[in-house]
Structures are given as structure tokens and as C-alpha cells.
Image 1 (cartoon, rainbow, N blue to C red):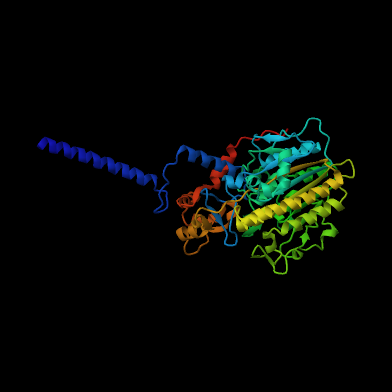
Image 2 (tube, rainbow, N blue to C red):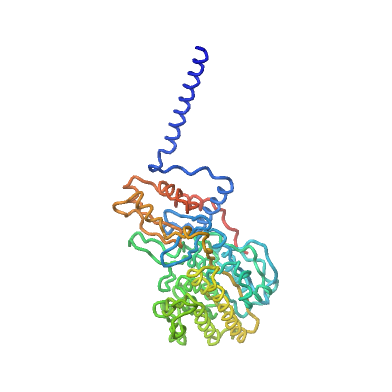
Length: 520
């Protein structure tokens, strides 16, 4: 019995010693974590691969001095938004990144293309149809849709359906006969996706117009935090194009033609309209191309006269003519120039302006091809308010389709069928979450302040959910004895977040990205 007892004592001693060493190792391994924050459980191979893909999407949009210090990805099915916006895009999940892309016209080889395609490919493909190359800043490629030996079309038109998920073409096809017919007789890309983060209007339109990654053109969100002025800076506010760091298709074509080409750009928000128009006269040897941008405060079309031109016949048009005496649409109050955008009444106002420009500007009247660039925003406005699954969305898409037919009829009255049309989107939109608690009202700032800076609440300087980026006061961070990694680990412990990266993570990933092949 003594021998058995001795053996048991030795075994217990070894167990205790092993447990003590392991415990000390665990304590040492988490010593750098903030109190009560434990590291996440090991992820499986699929999750790790997904995280890496999302990190590379952020890396493709990393721009020094503009990218936030923390970059967040909500879990699939969850989204983070503002109190005034019911649905918010910006994520890497399919509902935000799967977009339509098609090319239509005599110069196009029709059919379904399973070739992967991205927004960066649109500008170089349209430039090839015009017979020019985009500059070396371009990271996209010419898609294999143009016929060999094609004659240059008289007009090239880029139509950006803002907030248009690719699956709308199937779900609402019966309500969109014009777009459905274009899809059937065009070159349709079944695997077109956004390959960067965030997926929002300013970044998407800038990428479509330049053919460049956001890490090249410099538009990293709808806004950034301006550290020197200690305030938020909205990209393209007031129609100022100087935030865009490279040439656009419109810039290239007006310089190539010495200003002879007619270039018409229109959009219903500055951050969509301006990058489509490019730099206009605000570049060396530039000319003031036409830009009509909607002003939600006044209901008028406006422009930045330093860079662009607004036709006189658009200046007196006002959206106040849109709503009925009741001021309602489908039971919703829409009796203001801001609210009417969230209805199927607004596409007619957009189409009226574009049809007027097509009819009154000298499109197709010489041997220089002309360029039309249109941000068509109804699906985005209604998607933000009522969601992709709503009856409001179905009705709005139907009205957008009818108004598109009117615009194309006006174009064909000028140039016949001798035009090339590209149709795509800047991003998608999340569906109704499976439960109300999957919609989160921008909680990250409050969470971080409550945890790390409860008294002063000065640690976080800016957070716009659509950007997926949190801007941190790094001096305050240092004074609190914290690192960005501490904040990232804490946020990743929240059940609604899939991944949180620091800008060091993203910078390192950006340095490791393979350079894109030169445009063909």
C-alpha cells in the first residue's frame, strides 16, 4: 500500500507541476491583452482563408494617410448602420460585392462570360472601344468582348446602376423588360464582383471611372478623418475632383481629342457624379465637361463651375414638381427634395435631365466619338430605406427600367444603334436580417470608449459605417498605454464582427499584393 501511495503522490505532483507550467505559459501568452479579453478560438482553414481574402480586399484600397487605423468586417447577415439609414452596404459579403456587368452594341461579341471581371476592367475596355489606352495607373484589363476590327462607336455610354445587386436581374426581371432585353443581346458577365473594401459609392465610381485600384486612385471611402484640421473630410463635396489622384476615362478622352469630344456626366450625389466626370477643367489642358449633380437641399441640378459646365436648360428644373398634392408615395411621406429621392418618382427626374442633354447637345455630329457617364441612383436610395426584398424596390426598379428606355430612345434618335453601352453597379445591398438584433447602430465607438477611455471619450475620432473604418487618435492611444492590436482584439470578441484588422495589417498585405498585369 505504501508503494501504491507513493506512486499516486508522484503522479499527482507531476500533474500539478505540468498544470502550473501550462498555466504560466498561458498567462504569459495573453499578457499583452487588455484585462478580461481572451484571444479568439483557433479558426478553421476556411475561416482563415476568408479572413485573408478580406484582408487583401482592404489592402487593395490602402492609401497612406487616408485609410483608417481599424478596419472592420461585420459577420455575414449582420450589418452596421446609422440611425437614419435602415440598410447599409460596405461589406465583402456576396450581397454587397456581386454586381451586374454587361456590354451591349454592334462592337460587342454577345454571350455569357464566366470570366471573372472586376470594376477596374470597365474603363480600359471602354477606352479600347474608343481606340485609346488608359494611363499606367490602370490596374484593370481589357475584357474580351470587343469584335476584331470594330469601327469606333459614335457614342460610348457607361450606366452605373447605384446599389444594384446582380440577383435583381433574376428576381425582378419581369419588372425590368428593357434591362432584361439588353442582358439577352449583350455580353453578360456571370462572375463580376467588387474586389476591394469598402464597397460604397465613392470608391466604386472612382474605380469604374479610372480603371485603377483604390490604393492607386486614392478614394478609400465616402470620407476620411482630416487629422490636421481635426474634422471629417467628405470626398468630392461640392463637386471638387482634386481628391481623385489619377486620370479618369473622361479625362483621357477629352485630352486625347483636345476637348472636341462631347462628354456628359450626371449623378444624383456628388461622390458619384464627380468621379464620373473626372477633373474637367481642373487639370492641365483640361476643358469644362458637362456635369449635372443633384443638390438634395435645393432640389436643383448643380455643378462646380471651376471645373465643369452645367447647361442652362437644366438650371431651372426642380424636384419639387415630382410629388403629388398628398406628398405621399406608397404611404410614405416624400414631400421634400431630400425625401423624394427615396421613391420611384425620382428616376423620372434623373431621366428628364439626361434625355434633355442627349437631345440638345451635339452628340454624334462629327467623327469624334462622344461619351456619356450616368449614375442612376434609385435602387440605392430605395434599398437604403426599404431593403432589397421590398415592394418599394420592385416598383422602383420597374420605373427605372421605363425611364431607361426613354433615355435610350433619345440616344437612338441621335445616333441610331451605333453606340456602345456598358451597364454595371458600384455595390450591392444587404437583405433584411434574419432577426432585428443583426442590425447594429454604429456601436463600435461607444464600445471602445466604454472599455478603454470611459472618462474623456477621446480615443475614437471618426467612424462612418459605410467605410468600415475607425479612425483612432494615436496620441491618445499611446497615452492610455494601448495599441491598435488591443482595440482590434476587443472588437473581434463582439458577436457581430467577423474580422478586425489594423492598418499595419493592411499595409503589410498591400506590400505583398502582386502587381496587376499591364492593360492590353
